[in-house]
View 1 (cartoon, one colour):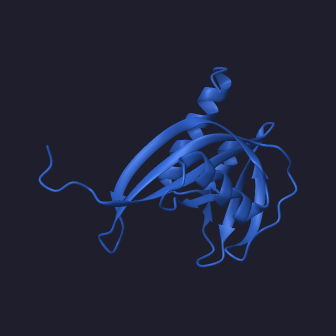
View 2: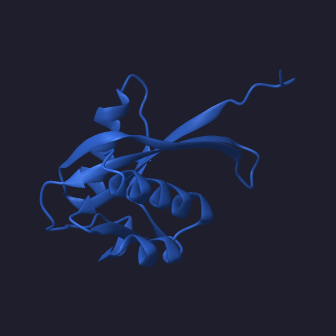
Length: 136
């Protein structure tokens, strides 16, 4: 048992596939690449929150298959974070970016993982293994 429980903001991300390719978006704030998604609002269901975030950031509607990876950490300011990654499928591929992002790419999972943080790359690898195993 830990001496101090983690108090954290919940962040959700979509490992979003269209066929064999998946979506990554480039942050306007620092130019880094990430999976679409964001923070869960108070009183919002996890599925509704992820759908809302993906729609706000990309204009896409998604089918959420299942959670595939979770992780907790403290950011550089010592604030708690809890991340949940979901395997998702795009209903369309016509992306309309919000002001939060400047670019997007539909890439093979290995190419997408190369652009992402280690944590997000791990989620991509897990999603790909599930898809290859027919477990999506």
